[in-house]
Image (cartoon, rainbow, N blue to C red; front, side):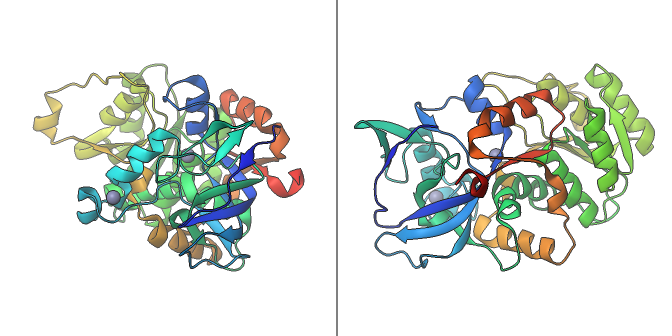
Length: 355
Ligand SMILES: [Zn+2]
Ligand SMILES: [Zn+2]
């Protein structure tokens, strides 16, 4: 652990004492270099905690329990005006800068800048975030559940509900059953999709998916073609929506090949820069097959995260079952090792343990 200097919250910002932080594949992508990230940076973008102080013009009260959304929106760019706030040009641009919304970091070490990751930097005891990232947590929802709703759950359920618009009795497959994929699976089950097929290389994850309600478990068969053939077999001809949550081109191809006529592969996973997916082109017009991209579940965090947490509280979305391990902040490297191992659903850093 390293001590960093944190500037006080400026106008429109909040200082948050973190209580829980989920470990997401995107953090691993930043470490491995799959996604270019400005360094040195404090990673972590799936957190929840308590507001300790706020800057000018912020309505939040100190003491408020909040979940952090990693995508604030500006409200005035072309995408925001088209109601596509999750594609906000301003937010994506500043996110890449490693600063907050004005492009400047609030973190430093010995006077040298340290950059933010996705505005949040939650692998820490405290963080400064744009107040627009803070979403109040309903009473009765634990910090670790709220934290997961801030990335994995919003991303996975949103891909199913918002991007794809899955309807009752639609056939769904989920390829890649980590935190995001399992959230997509829960989202598909919650709206009455049937059958719902889980696909993964890990037998542990397939068993977990079946325990959550997946109707079929298909182990990765070594190639996209062979795996898709199994999905076609168990679903009687393919799915309406194949959700891809790994960021691997071969998994995306398997998703595409798993669809039936008018079906869509929904791509959530983050691909390496320059990755391409070779598709059997003729089936696109002939079968009206489609590819849909989905980022942050096409969601509007301030509307959708409270709704997700209300569903959890009502017992309709068992988000607690996504947490496979709790570790203290000091054990973040162990959390990444578990993720690389491929059997963990979601590892949560319990920052109350660390304190
Ligand atoms: Zn994430
Ligand atoms: Zn915008």
